[in-house]
Amino acid sequence: MSPQRLRAMFAGGGLATLAAVSVLALGGGSTPATAADRAAGDRAASLAAEAGPGAFGAGKQYVPGAAAERRAAEHAPAVPLPDGQAFDDINWNNGALSDAEIQGLLEFNAACRWWIADADRPSKDSAAVVAAIPGWPSMRGGDRHTVALAFTVGGDAKLAAAVLASCRAESKA
Image (tube, rainbow, N blue to C red; front, side, top):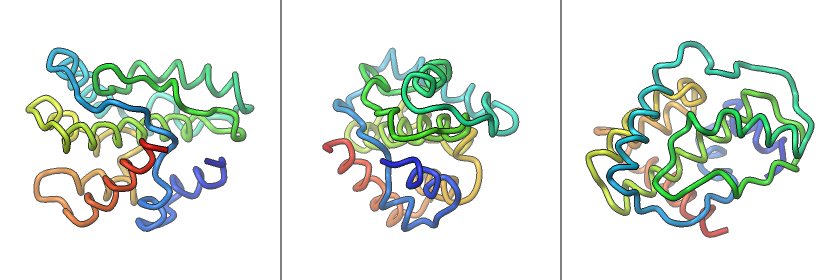
């Protein structure tokens, strides 16, 4: 995914764009383990409790590759993933990204993985993570917030289904 497409996705490019442009390759496996899921739920709640735009804010631009990947590695431990998954499948060589874009990419990537995990194998713990996603720093406003709310109780089922299909397609890419 090019940085330009990523920026369009996170700059409020519309729900259709957000659903169609999804995330980078998501990796496999979406069956969370209960103990790991509980720990992820704690991290999800902590992430949602962060004030403002999150740990990185708008931030400066990072060069592609190693610098962006190092910056992502600093934030990744705060973003919960289903058990056995990691952010090791993201290609950071697609252009310079800001701190906010790096955080947004990690959080949306993780959200997609949780939405898949919760759809495939719902549990109390995965539901708690999914419920916390709308409060994650990069998911708090605009279209991203609308998408995240679609997966909560009483959310827009049609939108959730479309985004889930897009997440699943990207996970197989």
